[in-house]
Amino acid sequence: MRISGIYSVLAGLIFVAIPAVMIGGEQESISLEEKRKLAEWPDFRWDDWVSGAYGSGVDAYFDDHLPGRNAVIRWADGVKWAWGLHPAVREHKVLVKPAKREQIDTSGGDSARMNYLQDFDESYSGEMLIIDGAVFTQNSGNPAMSPAFAKMLNEYAEKLAGHTRVFSCVAPLSSAFIPVQKYRRYYQRNKATLDAIRDHLDGPLFCDVLGEMTARQDQKLFFGSDHHWTARGAYGGYAAFCKAAGFAPVPLEQMQRKVKTGFLGSLYALTRDASVRDHADTFEYFKPRVEASAVRFGESGLDHPIKSSVFCDGFQGSSCYMTFICGDAPLVKISTGVKNGKKAAVVKNSMGNAFSVYLVSHYEEIWVFDFRYSKHVMLDIIAQEEIDDLIFALGMYGAMSSGTIHMMRKLGEGGVGMRPRPVHNDTAPVPPAAPNRDSSAILVPQIVPQSQDTNGQ
Image 1 (cartoon, rainbow, N blue to C red):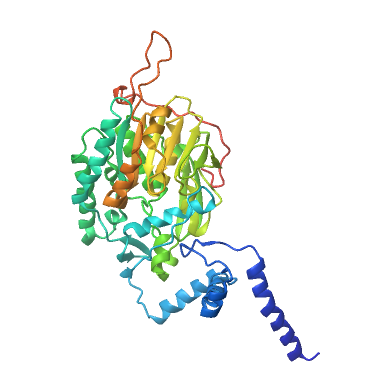
Image 2 (cartoon, rainbow, N blue to C red):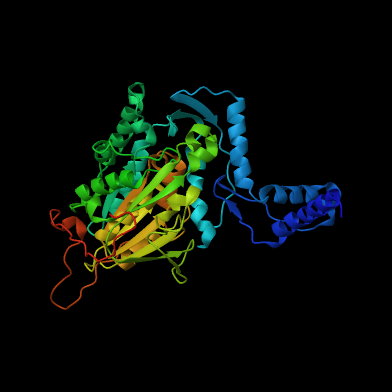
């Protein structure tokens, strides 16, 4: 057989093999790098065939499932960057217009882990500031919205008075920590927004998250390629909560340190900026040395728990942030080896995922509600489970929207109200609830011996 004939046979085999693999092989349904759902093979309908819609659906499927597609996309981004002749400057801006993503199932399966990506669609748009390969939002809060958020917390505190403490634990935006003096105004705007929440609280306890993070500003507090805070940033939020709650925070040095590399998150997906790609984040996280397990639930009901984990170590690359409580779900219940009878409920968006994992050192149970997806009646669960502390731990963008404030308020609607604490014997009542406890008492976490991690920490 002549050489040309061999080439023809090989080309024919490749032409047949690639579509066969794409159709018959196991395919991903979600692109973590692009933060979107991939096209599915279309159902055949005669009308779609005639109109051409069926063919367009097939084209979209092949476009989304081409082998090596992510590598091709990264190569194309590099070509576009080079073609634009971008100078090697320290600072530049990128205009982004994030498309509204399709709502992804929250029934508790793997796809629920993708829901944190919806955070960005809630408020992020406009110019992104890029400095040395790190992206900063130029949003900086809105003090005019703070009274509305504080009012919602005050309503919960009034309903739960004498039974459950309420905490405001709102994280600032990354704009508060832009490392250039001329953008200092963004820090002041973040601070004014959080201070206005504090000043309008009547009953709830305020956690000075920005203050604790500022004290740690020599550390990396936000990712350069993603809109979330890092584990060290979230530790600042945890330290602020502990100070307000009367707990002693467990030092990071007493936790197990883990590290992943090559994290390119939501901000890289939006900007596709080569300088950000070249400065991929190192994903560092810390595991409290406390025995803990988790289950997750669907939008409503507690009858069908799905086994989960406090840390999902297997996530890599663009999905690293889903290491914390395996990503978003309507409701997650964490059970720990800390046998002190104390329980907490956390109301959060995805920023609260990295915060919630630190609480395992202080509570026997932690109920984590995602206000965007949960249809559970939170007040009923607080009453039935005798929860001591209700913590609103979320990113500022969730606290500055009337829509998201309404979602948090609806978590408590339909509840039966607080029931009296049960009496365990005929003569001695149960000790008073958390608000009346000695706030100086320090909870000592139960330490579970673990082997040294791969980083020698």
